Length: 136
Image: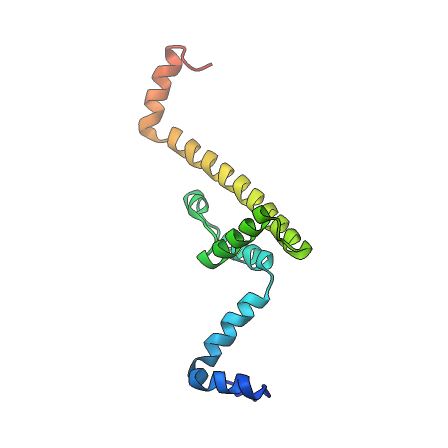
């Protein structure tokens, strides 16, 4: 671990003293929130997709609860009409990501449906329906 020396105001130093052992975790959390929400959401989605998920895993994917909470706060502020222009852009970018994920999930659902139709036990039943003229 690397040691870092910081100069902080005296009142902040007093507040940090009781939690000095937890400072690495506190700094990590602070850094997470210093990155724009949309970048964190896109990064999370890309990291997930880089694992080459199955269609079922794609359907089950959800953003982290921290991201969901922040998006919900932005949505509440949007409804109240109190978003800043930067927050409006952030919410628009989150919306763009949501549309991409919806399209991926729709495709994953199609793949799962196709796999279900092509199961050996389904193929025989499908052939009976085809022979009876129920499928074009």
